[in-house]
Amino acid sequence: MNEDFLHRIESVVTGLGYECVHVSLRTDFGRVKLQILIDTLGGINAGDCETVSGHVSNFLDSSEEIPELDKGRYYLEVSSPGIERPLYKFEDYIRFQGKEARLRLSAPVEGRKTFTGIIQSAENDAVKILCDDGEKDIPFSSIKGGNLVYRFGNEESKRRKGKK
Image (cartoon, rainbow, N blue to C red; front, side, top):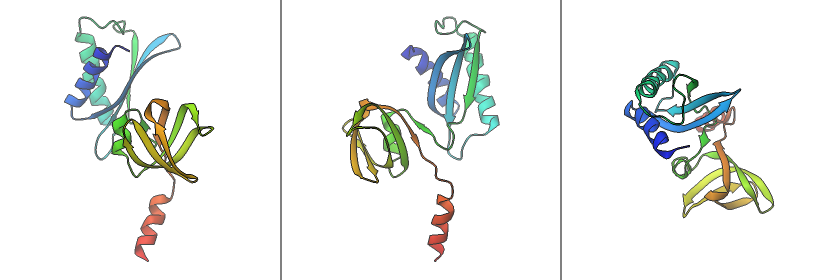
């Protein structure tokens, strides 16, 4: 995807006060789909998605030259990244240190392509993750995809332990 196009979409989203988590452009069933994931402190609701969608639509419709999109012939989807938020940027791994994440790799490290554990650090272009079998240093360039892991009941059990 053209970096200038991505930057312009991110500017519209951040100008509204939202974090632009990710922008993707792909073809679904022969039609171009522009997907934008947004976030903010306190979470995202339908009104937030509607606001961003309206502003991005106006931006796209008023832009003179957008080679990535055939005007009016695309789907626009604006949504929250969800509870198991995807991690796209190196900065995401810095931001979510101490949180549990699942990493999928493009090439095996220690014979594995998937690691789940607590993000310990992100520095020197590597993510350090504490798994059940110890700490692993994963080169960021090897990470094909990552996301936070939500364990149902974790918050409740933590609250109970704190009350004892």
